[in-house]
Amino acid sequence: RGLSVHPLCGPRNLSDRSHSFDSKSLNSTMRCSFRVSLTTTIKSPSRVNHARRGNAVRCSASATSKVAVITGANTGLGKASAEDLAKQGYTVVLACRSIERGEAAVVSIEKKLAACGLPASLDLIQLDLASIESVNDFASSFVKKYSTCDVLLNNAGVMAPPERELTKDGFEMQMGVNHLGHFALTAGLLDPLAAAEKARVVNVSSVAHEFGTMNFDNLQSEGYFGYLGLGWPQYGQSKLANILFTYELHRKLRFAGISNVMTNAVHPGYVDTELPRFLPVNIYPLFKQLGGLISPVQGAKGQIALATSPEHADTSGKYFADLANEGKPGVHQQRRSSAKSYDLDAASRLWEMSTELTGATFDFATVNAREERA
Image (cartoon, rainbow, N blue to C red; front, side, top):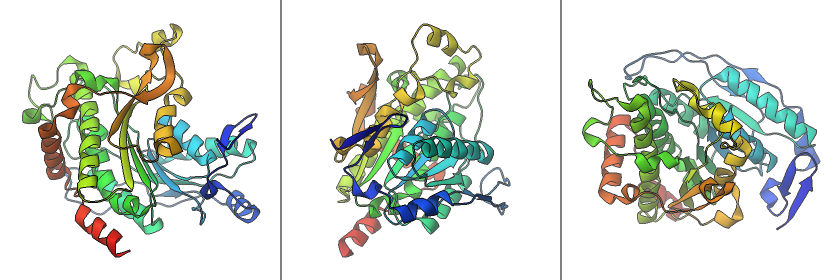
């Protein structure tokens, strides 16, 4: 399908004109300089006030480049996705909690693309999903620089801290980072998503959603018996929330008459990443020795396909999963998610609670009216 294969860089899609580069833009991109600015946030209504470092910026988008935002893009699945989309010609905005680690990822990706003779259009903006203030700051910074967002890859996550931890806003860490932070981020980027010719929102979930249960009476896992099982019930709950959010967002977009924004969820597989860093006993090295883990490049294939493949240009409201249990590790196909993930009442209740907790709103009517006038 219009693919060429580079000996080091693998396949490149030549069929999409928006991903092409002329010599002028190539030279401009390669000359791009690096700069870091420092800012201090003013006091906010969040429960924990904090200072943060400002934006670290690499090359700005070219006039023809599509724009992708990837959370947690400094490592693992996020970095593999960032590298792949950059190769395809996207301007990739790395949304990272640590500026230093984000800078290192930018340098690494640039070097790999340079070895392939490709330019890299990368932008690094700080995002701490454990802070709604930081999420709002990110969205504000993004819309000042970019008029459209073609891809939003909600990739970052926390898995099973053995003891209950809180975000800066007092949310249980896994629910706060894995769901509520991404919920607020998606709301903040709704305008540029809807302004794209065809946008895609990809929410990275997990097969762990299958044992997840929404505890709406104690969503933050408070109390002596609120956080049991070394954090695994909360992880499953947050991954179930990812899928409930995906399906509800799809329904609300279509009900509002917004048909150019696709949203899907994906289980990447059991991937060799930093995700198990909180586990009291990290069994991932044993899984790796036994061949039970796939690489970040393999695990990212599903989310990359949902974000960029022409095959999924009109796919929305679906769940995709790695097929390792079917003897096909690194292969992702559409599958039916758990029965609980199709609970319409649970999806609606989660949406209402998420809106109340984060203060984020999805102004579908205004977006649709703007599209009709255009």
